[in-house]
Length: 83
Figure 1: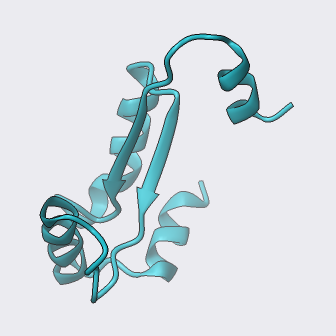
Figure 2: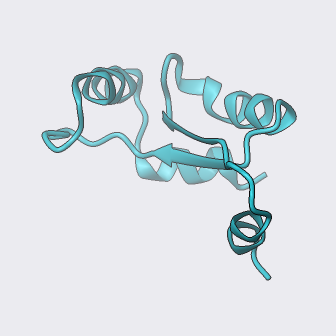
């Protein structure tokens, strides 16, 4: 059974966190994931910043724009996550 199904069957609330990869700094992504996991987050959604985040609210638009300016892109994100 995958972790999401397991968590949903536990009959308790799930703490799910979204953040934009590459924000606030380009090299913070892996550390943020590790810190969230260490502090009990059940589900982590990593947002891949893109240049036209119109469907997102202002907070995600701002973090996505900053992450792109920091140099975040798909190839770099997967490189950071591979270890």
